[in-house]
Length: 130
Image (cartoon, rainbow, N blue to C red):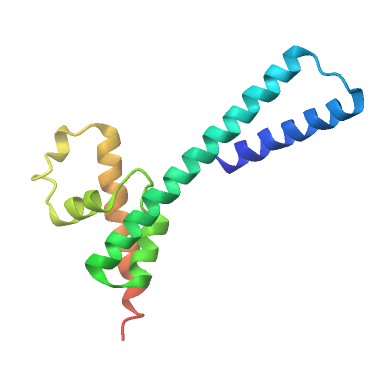
């Protein structure tokens, strides 16, 4: 997503440089610049939403576990589209209880990712306990 943002920004920069040199811009180019600006605004909004989701997940983890290193690890590694409640459900339920075989492929991937992240974070932070 960052690469796309950078590419769009470079395109806008090039367009504005061309505009400054020519002093005139065809309507077609103005519309392209406007579309690019709207796209950047949408990406900024999406990034802000993702940041909010990640922060909420982190603070809920801290409230539940009180372990900053573990919660930082979860925050940085869990899929953005997951939330803390999904994490708790996946970790505290068996695959049978979640009806895993009948889940959609995307849901299975999410659960598998949650298991993997939990194992990674436990292993990463286990040696740091006092």
